[in-house]
Image (tube, rainbow, N blue to C red; front, side):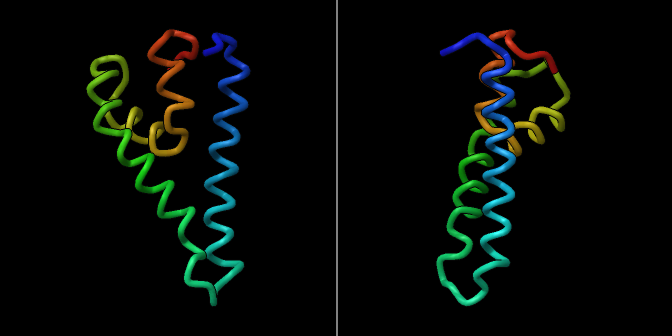
Length: 88
């Protein structure tokens, strides 16, 4: 694990790009049965991280902030935040 914050910012941008690609695939391939696989995978994976992250970061930020950032960025946000690399 690296402690350089810009590395984590880069990964967070990558998470947002992945969300954008997942949503775009749904609209770009309307006839495909597999068009939403990436979107569903992201929804399941990032939603699954929320309970753990709420326990891990309890009292450090509001639960809404923790859940929102975890949903958008996943571990690329909460891991460096929990180690003090990133702020809020």
